[in-house]
Length: 372
Ligand code: KQY
Image (cartoon, rainbow, N blue to C red):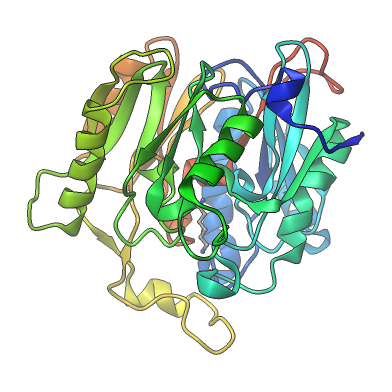
């Protein structure tokens, strides 16, 4: 594994779309008692279900802390690789490397991670174990690594169509806790250089009360080049309405890197999901402060799905719109099986299925272990 100080796009590397073939997927076994209620018991069951489905069509590598290794090994299928690795929490999307490819090989990007805003508005302290994971994972996989720790970025804040277009949100990437000394134009330039993109789409907003400063992966996702789903509500009294509307307006008035109009499919949101008194009681406090307050609205969205080689794994909330979301996504992914997974116990941690997964693209020059 070499540490690289060159620039991926200049080396011929780019970030492929999530719907392109994968070698596998990285996940982290949950443990943090102020993120996951009742010692992460329910979250572990939900993660295990996600892992079980993904592992049907791609290799899953699960990082577990020393203390959790036995529990992870016991709960997870034999074809899943469990490796011991320390972490602060369990958001592989944000702390694992972003992988780029030149069509033959893959490399990882090691971005800086500061728990979604550092001392300005980050969600926990310290975050040093999480910040080391991308490099450790590149080492484990034996892929060369771009050192970009000077730039704060989480994987959940970017989506790529693999054809030159990357999407993000202004609310997240221009937030004061990430790269406050850089202008929007400078941030855009870094995204283009590191993700091999020619155009960055800046959606103004994300999901209401999303504690990541509104990651793109909760509001909008590519389902194919020039085609996206956008989280949507028709309720004009919901603060989400204006947020989604501003994104729709933006998407309808722009084109992608290839000059194509973007086809937008509205993906209805579930009715607002709020955390209960009982759930809050199951969460440890964080440095003396409650992690969540009963009645707090969680950032529930069906757009936080994961596209594996064989499936699309979609969060479900016990809501009347659960089946509508599955139907819409089934039509958009006709070659994959669309599977709903009850995900309230992941949502309580502050994210969902996409946030706990990070895909490793397929490449002919990479494959250090047998395929799933
Ligand atoms: O949504 C994500 N990508 C991560 C959410 C982190 C929440 C921490 N409580």
